[in-house]
Image (cartoon, rainbow, N blue to C red; front, side, top):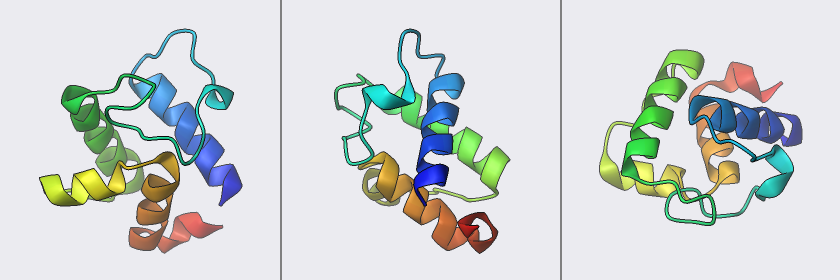
Length: 88
């Protein structure tokens, strides 16, 4: 799971074009939306599109999005639950 979390952090940085941010700059339990990274609802929409495209996993309502984007760890866990092939 730790490798997938690191991979996911890298994808978030690339997808959102976060300059001067590295995977080590935010923890797996840090809040994603509205946290230290300054991500907002527009960023969340971009992440939803990336997740659907890259991992074939849908986040199709606001309540689910709030739960899933609570942290990188919760996002990784959700993606792996919905796409078990990524658990390896």
